[in-house]
Length: 394
Image 1: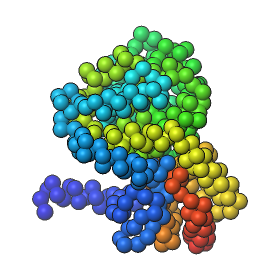
Image 2: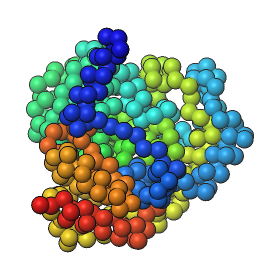
Image 3: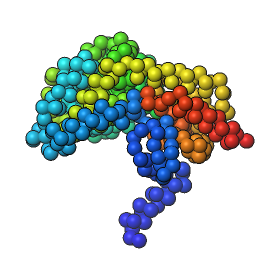
Image 4: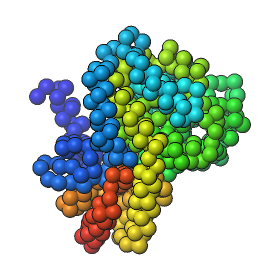
């Protein structure tokens, strides 16, 4: 083994010894009922909140899209990878979110990298909620701008940071709409008021809110009755509630043209698959015309919280959340791993979330509910949690 390989092996051994080693599991499909290593498994850790990843209409739209437009874009959007179907989806996403235009990216991670690195100079300042997604932090690092973090959901903390910065400086206020590991929602109206007061643009990454929240599924802004103009930069994903893949940024004509010119993750990436684009148009139709899916999902959320509170299981704390993300705080990462393994023994897949994804001492099971789950599925989860917690309690 050469020096390079020894160094890598040492890093891997450190990862194992600290309990942070991660492994993939290959499942048979993307449904909530799947198979892993030949065994039937019920999943409660997917972000497919509306169960659209396997919806027959979405699947057929993707197949028809591949037959009509091809499977791949063939080049970046600015070479010859941009097709009319991309225009159609961008127009629909802009209309849905109430913004002037939208721009497609190949993933939410790249969208966040692209926006912040394109808009912020090295002399700039980006002010983040402390629990913002890693892609938002990495976009700031890529830009070279100064990264500031305020205490989670603390507007006084954010105010103190903004008050210290010169009004003439390039600044950007950034927050998740729904926080991916805690499941709670940002107070977007309060953030917008703060942004107005300090004359700083507001960027919201609503990856986990779009499709799930609001009367028409238009996300956190709709649910909180915040006018789209209050959030000049909105990022959304297609790979969660919409069940496909990719992302978009919605905003003004000027913002979108700026990103087309300067967002390197857009400029230098092959365009989103036209087949996936066709599938996303079909899933967007379902989101907008079948509110019963959201109604069923929110019924499951309420029932889960009600029954888990009644069970009062030892060793876990149900964190406050009204979204499909229902974190069960355990604290110790080894205990979180042990409970996840117990659930797996009972045919329920719910992965443990550990540092560095969450702060030390806050390891948890991140239960995610889907409109594809049934009442019986929820019964199985609750039973498995009760058995697992009792078995692990001394």
